[in-house]
Image (tube, rainbow, N blue to C red; front, side, top):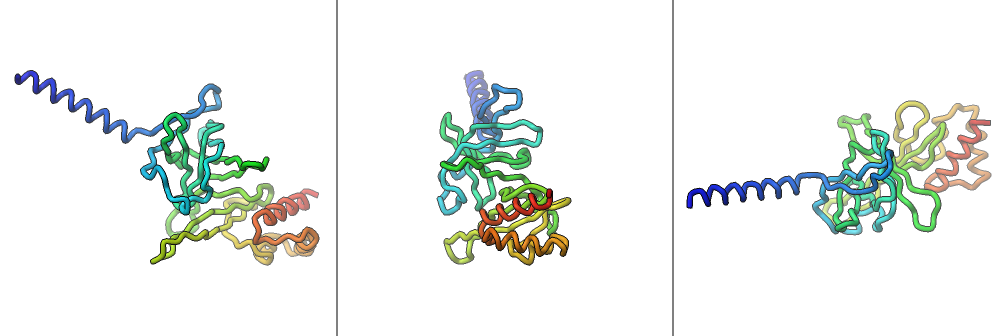
Length: 228
């Protein structure tokens, strides 16, 4: 009888160890048939069905994750949760949701149904405050002058209401710096001798910088002008 309990206790120990490891281990999946491809590495997401109001994009879409080691996971099902600034991944084998490990991600893209241009996000650490803030920035436009947007979501105190609180960054040399998409602020990043040409460009194309698509077009046109 004593030997039975010893064996039984050992069996239970192995079972509990296996369960504990199963809970703590990352969940993985994705394409790995090419040298450049690796599986998605994500931690298990506790809230499998988060409220739609907590999502910047409510629907899953196909995308690609690019890692800091130069590898990628393509044609995987992704969603960006702006409330927690997390990249979510759907494991289609069992429809479990994982949070992609941020520190391993350099950038990711999300397909837009009916639109050829993909949404692109880059991993950035803002070191300008008292504490470093690790975040994903959406690419608005890139070139000699680049503009990004942090799709920050704020929960109003005392209310069950989430509001978008976008923070824009502009980059010309070095690290991105915060800015507000306003004409005077944009002009302040360029030499005075270029202000007239930029004003004329904005006026000719009827561009309002408060609109992301207009802002992207403005930066792209300015970059073209800079190359002339």
